[in-house]
Image 1 (tube, rainbow, N blue to C red):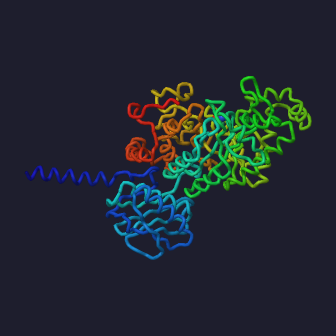
Image 2: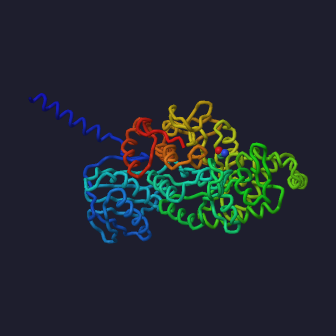
Length: 520
Ligand code: ACM
């Protein structure tokens, strides 16, 4: 009897020790954390206390989120109270960094920046989300992200998902501390943003999708855009629009054929015409309206795969005249001339110039340009970009294209010579694996991003299936230092978040028996 009692005691002690060594149940895993004594009880009588000016908005956001994730209806006040959730400005922390200190009496979230305060509140929400009147285990956390750029791109040209779905995605991004939403709004099948000076772009260019060329026009009005940008801003997410040029312009050319530069047999009417002066005026007017809608002061102008549609340039009299006048020896030189001129427009608008890695050759000003390295089979493009001093976002197809399948059993989706993008490959992404010549520790690397192209994604259900839970692996790869990452531990923590995804109406990929693959 005594023996079995001491055995039981031993087991209990062991359980305490292992639980003390448990990972903090947060995604992305914080930089430093420890479980501490005490339990915090959250209920309708636990106010949020703000004494610092300027934190009211953060308190209001937290108030709404507590209601959503825990059911608690807390008040906001400026008088000290205990127990309470205290938001505090603290000087000297890095941008986006925060500390979270918990005891039975208080939860204190401190940061220098609004972003830091927001991420502190997110960490608390993740700890509190299952509470529903139950005590919450206390943790002390000191945290800051690995990368400034933690991005996700959604292609709404091929298929349009609409405002409510975009907001839902922004909710999920924010809950995992992702902070850049790259919105791919224009491409071959559809133009998805209202431009008041050129209404046909949306009304005509918005007709059709990748799978239905006659679908009624779908696009975001400028009012919709403003609403989404404000929604994202409240969640510390910057929205970056992409207006792809000079290629991938098919939908725009349907609306205003006078600015088309033609294409090739396979890609008809694919480019804008770089030989006509009017094209530059037209696109500058478009970019001016876009600039006014997006406070990010960054516009992505694509610049990818232009050569798919330059066949016509060889015989177009305007392009030929331009080549003579500007002494441009090749079609690539014309392409880079075009990108440089449109970049100049952006610089005049005080915007950074963002483009896919093809623009590395376009002689853009290094300090004002961000290059998106997507062609993993061309590491020399990354090296070139860094050597030239451009800032770089890493989004190589492997492992960051989410239209690639995530499991060998998947029926629909892309592969690259048999390779695809399982959860683990995203989670374990690290620049430490790059060849030394590329220098993955280069401070010019802004961060990482996943891109969801939607040729094979026509429904919201499939969009979710391809995005989740890979979005959570991306979040941790973007936030947590490589030496703290452990895939097996991540999978354990992830299990705790799957019911929450379900509760939010997200159809995530799981064991194929539980979540059959939506093939459209
Ligand atoms: C791209 O995938 N064309 C950037």
